[in-house]
Structure formats: structure tokens, C-alpha cells
Image 1 (cartoon, one colour):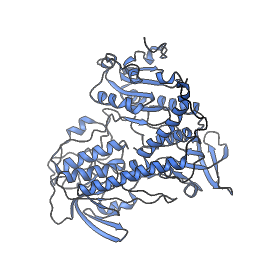
Image 2: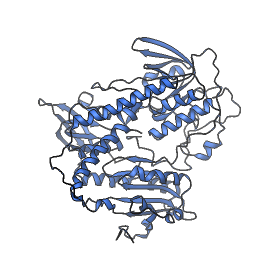
Image 3: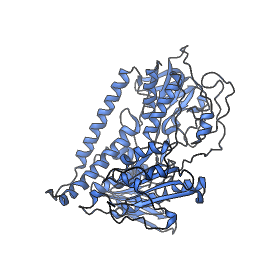
Image 4: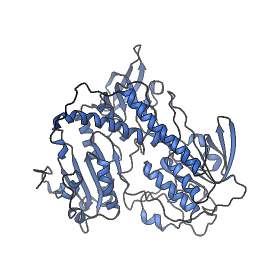
Length: 550
């Protein structure tokens, strides 16, 4: 689950058009990507500065087979690495892909495919769906279905079904690599020098040389440095294959991973509590984040605000005693839980790579790259969650990997555009967004130059079961004058990802408020609420609708 700061979603809402990072120039490590150093200006990690990004000349690599074992070695068998490796082979390169998963402290491990397939997006969405189905079963009674009140989930069966699907994807992935003639090496790679890698295999060690390398090792969840954290706590790496019911669960962390896990656990009948150190959904629009939290609290999920854990102790009955402190009052409290789930952020997996041997610089356990995904060493690249300051999301990693391979081996010039990437937080009431948050639009353009259109709405399917519509809300953050270009769209409600995907394409194509308001909506849908927006925050008018059809 990827997909920053303290959550994989961090940074998406804070990407601003025209921003420019003032970090140090990375350069190209000597001869550059293609062995040419012809007037290539230094690049200063622009984040989303498109003008600077495309002003940078495209540098194309020509593989020289020479004395190297491979044209390209990809380190990491996740979304970014696999996409890059397969695309490179398609364009004639000799490619190997190294992949190795270190077991978690409780021994959880998995197959090829990376975080998304094994312990991220896929199992998360399946368990979210299981939660929604349980909710729908109980709502069905209001629609005239005869439903047995004794219906309840079977955790063991759910985990088995999820893991069977994951294993099928692992198998298909291995077959796909074989068919595409990507050599898959199940080993832990570390650099000997900038063209040589040492792979530690079950059967021993193997030295591998390559003209170029792509680092796509991603990250793993962090553990807090408190007594009992590693011994007794778990992370999202463990939850989806847990061999017993989680029961009463303390979820430490309020990024998107923490909130999603707490949401589906509640829907499956367990008792999650969310511990929040500072703010909810850091990096996302904070009005929307607080609405998400409020909607979860309404469903019976308690939030411990401004609180940090101090220790975890295992009692004689096997349950976990957690001591925690309120950072504002200093008050120390304790409670007993069946499971403690750490969701406090992720750490880039740079430690085992011996990057200093290759001359690659590390920044805050991540790797800085330029607009061509080049590190400070000209023939070593990085893509996916391991790169610093970019959205940690599977579709971003996949596209960036493919585009990099095409530039290296197919004479392509297209670069990854990291701006305006849509994302969804799969909480019980889902939140999806694309573009700028309200805060970042104001920070970038000034409060007087930003107009926010907003409105609450009532999903038709919520009426009969009398579901709460209190937090169903949409808003468009836009330019106040002129063409009123839309800077960001935010949606809280059912099927959020399906709703925002199409609007994401519109926003990247220059969507304006005029176009949005002159688009005829599909009725009755929740997506049409964006086309009905007419009330601005500045007006002070009530954004609550009186009716649904007029």
C-alpha cells in the first residue's frame, strides 16, 4: 500500500504547479546517461516544475554489449522493477531482475511482485471489499431481502481466499518473466562497484555485471523505537496473512495505510482504535482528512489524538498491554489489545545495497533522481517508492519504469510527469483526490486568487437503508479569475476511485470551472455532484442540497 512522510499518500496533495526544489544539483556522474556530456545543465530535482523538466534535454542511452553480463540489471521485483525489466526486454535488451524479500520479525514472507501484489494495494482492496460486502448484506434487509441476523465473517477463510489470489498472481508473474526472457534471480543484491553486483542466493553467491542498473527496491514499514514494538507488534506486511483473528486492535498511525486497515477491521466486526501523533492523512487536504476521520468516528472507531505509544508488554493471557502518552497534557494511560499494528510510515530499502561502493548518494533513506530518473551516477537509475519526493503509488511506479526503459532502449524521449496524480484512500467512506489541496493552492497562488466550490450531497443508494450522508462531500479548488482553471478535485463518498479517475484526465487536460459546470451529469450518480457545484466557500452560502432532482 503504497503507494509518503508518515503515509504512502503523503506529498500528493502538496505538489504544486510551478514549485522548484532548491536542493543540490545531482549532475550526471561523468559521461552522462548516453556517454555524452554535451552542454547538459545540472538538474535540481524539480518535483512538479514541468517547464524546467521539459527544458532539460533528453539524454538517450545506447546499450554497448561489451564485456558486461547484461545490458540492464533491475534490483527489485515490485511494480516499478518488473515494468521496467519487461519493457527493456521488449526493446531488445538483455535483462536480469533481482528480487529478495526479508521475512518480517514474525516470519511473514511472500513471492515476486512487490508490496502492491503481496502486502499492499491488492490484499487491502480485497479486505476493504469484504468489509463493504458485510455492510451491504445488512443493508439488504431494508431493500426487501430476507437476511439472517447471524451472518458474520470468517477471518480464516477470508485470509485463505486473499492469499490464494496473491499466490496465483505470483505464479503468473514468474511465467510472464520467463516468457519475456527476463532472467529472474531470487537473491539479495549489493554493489561491488558501479558496474558490478554481488547477489546472495540460497545456493551461494554470484557476481553480476551490467552496463546499467535500475534500483527499484521500494520500502518496508517502520517500527517505533520503544520496548516491545518489534517483539509484539505487526505491520501491514503481516496483517493480510495473519493466522488468527486480530480482535481488538490498536492501529498506530493515521496515514492512509492506518486508516484503511482500521476501516476494514471495523467492517469485519473487530474493534480498532487509531492512535494519532499529530494530524490525520498528512500531505492530503486537511479539511477532507478531518471529514474522513469524523466519518470513521461516526462508525464507532475511536481516535486517540496527540498520543504516542511508550511500550508494549505481553501479559500472561497473551494479550498486549500498551502504555501511551498524550503529548499535550503529558498524561500517561494504558489499555489492553489483542493486536498492535504499526502504520507510522515506510523506510526505503537502501541499507543492503552498499550504494557507496557504486557512488550513489542517499537522502533520508531514499535516492534522489533528476527528471530522467537518473541518480548522481549516470548509468544508475531509480524508480518507484525508493526515489525521494515523489508519489509512492503503484501506477506511478509502473509508468515511470516503462518510460525509463523506452528512453534507454527504444530512443524514446517521454518523461514521467509526477504532477496531478490521482489517488484514493479506501476508508469505509472513500476519499479520492487529484491535483492540489486547498492549503497548497492558497500557498502557491495566494488566498485571494483561489476559489473553492463545494457541496454536500446525498447518494441515492443511501436513502432506503438510511445510511448517514453527513460526510458525503465534494469540492473543486480553482483559479478565482480568468479561465478559472481547476487546481484540484476532492471527493468523499462511495466508489471514490471510480469517480475521480475520469476527472483526473480532465484536470490534466486543463479543466476549467466553466467546462465543469457546463458538463451534463449522469443521473442519479454521485459523480455528477462535481457538475452541480455552484456555491463557493467565499460566498458563505449553505452548501447542503435541498433536493436531488432540481
